[in-house]
Image: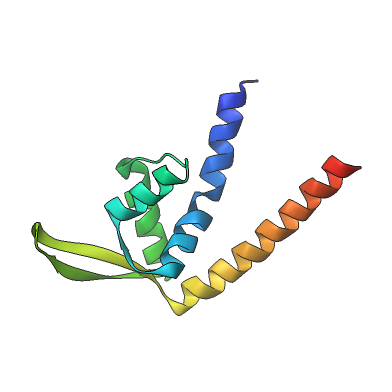
Length: 108
């Protein structure tokens, strides 16, 4: 078993949660989301992010609006919907439960 494969799967499993956490703070453009994920050492490429944003939008968790840009065409800014806020609360509870479980196993 390869540790890099396991770490990659762990990152993929938390990616939706991290994106929703970022968008809870403020609406964001795709490249801004990628930059913030890179800063957090959660490396992701546009080819991974766009389908995920589309799934979240189609699920009713995100909406977007076009905002004019001084550097080219209008940009699509994503933001959480009310359903997205509720979904994020569920993910936060699940994350806390998982974290508690792992800490329990680690400490016993």
